[in-house]
Image 1 (cartoon, rainbow, N blue to C red):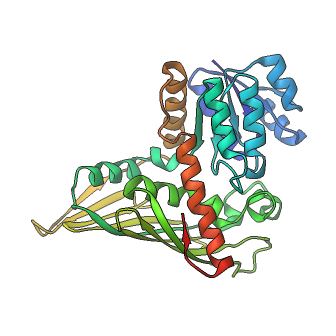
Image 2: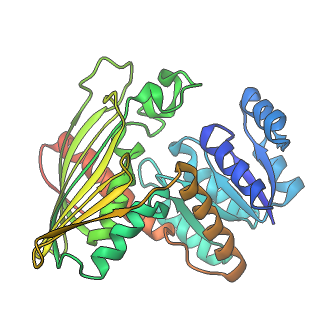
Length: 327
């Protein structure tokens, strides 16, 4: 199949390389000359400056939208109109406008929409899901989730001040850019009904957006999760603690382990969940390819992307309104 990478920055390059290694044909488009040059010279990929030319001349089977979030819906609609299946990097949108119409258009065109919440394909998170669903610690009543990493280290070859993460109008800020944690919390614990959040720019980083957020989610089940996220922390941290009625599960990304404490035995079991960072992106693309071939349902389809976005937008709205937001 032929895949079009729309936006040849860091994540676009990763997907392009992975798709090529999976044996797929890849082309690219980007309005930035340096991005086109890099992907041409380093990956041997044909590129176009204009999206309309890439779509009309190459007629790709699928398109990957790897642009800043404020362009996601507009570009995805263009790709669908060109009869391509669409993979959209998270979040599906920066403000929610046009998402319902986009999903209806995809259904009408009988095309797949997948959203890039790659953490669901990480061995650690996948194991957490398996353990929770199997009742390993009984009903999960609460969770503590954390992510922190210094923004200038996210994309070392790019000036962070020029990244969409630093820009309010392009859909930046830690809440939208780290909606991964919101998405996997939903996957593990169900749908969110209330969101309370305190968020602000508290560092000296030159950004227009919130760089730190602490939110509390209440789920339909009655369970509660606390999520901390920031792009200020100098040492990378990503972990999760699930508290159940029959035990506790802890996952640490950097240590690549899961620890399960079972109240019945009063024993702690350690599970190795080593996973090279690129593995989850490869698995994500493998599933997207398989869904296209079989008309299957992606693990994170458009509707899932919409639900995670709704929680993220509620988290952004909560500090502005100074109150809990109902989702």
